[in-house]
Length: 231
Ligand code: VGL
Ligand code: ZN
Image 1 (spheres, rainbow, N blue to C red):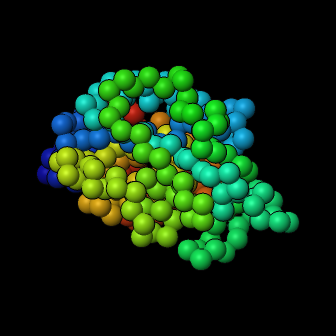
Image 2: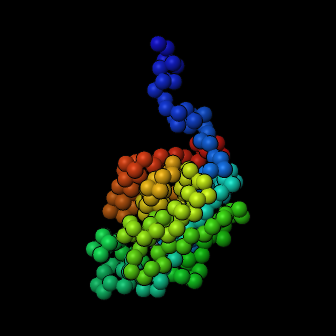
């Protein structure tokens, strides 16, 4: 058997689509733009390194999508995920809460503050929905689908599946927290799920970035680059 034929057999449909520089984006596909908010951008209170570099990539790929939704981290003042809420604790320490381990963060994305605004440089006029999350004082919510108790739904799963969405592409901040948890939960609600790596940046605290990629892989999330969309 020639190496071409062998290669054709070995390459799955997905890899072939990727090799051709295209993964189909159609009317049953959504782009989920996660937390591109001032607090996570350079100068913000929980700035993700090079976080601003995702913006031109996201603006470019979003042009290919009829359906785009965005998420917005939206915490109460004194939120349970803030180190400042826990006497003696510092940002990036981990505490055990009723729903599991919680990384403690600098205060960020407080409801109604300019730090919580989605970046003014994001330009996606067709975006259909902004889903806010993390607004319950005593539960964090990295995922756009379920809060950190893994039970309380945000409603996004129903919104997407009721509207016939079958496939989700996820981009934004931060790769190892809100992007990863959103992508893993997208699989849980039955969506074919892709994370666009070059349209994301990570925080990477205590090995969190490698761990997140391993968990995404285990959940069946596919890791792609924006060029794989042919955009
Ligand atoms: C995020 C930490 C705390 C994120 C949100 O958007 O990834 N990370 N809150
Ligand atoms: Zn947060």
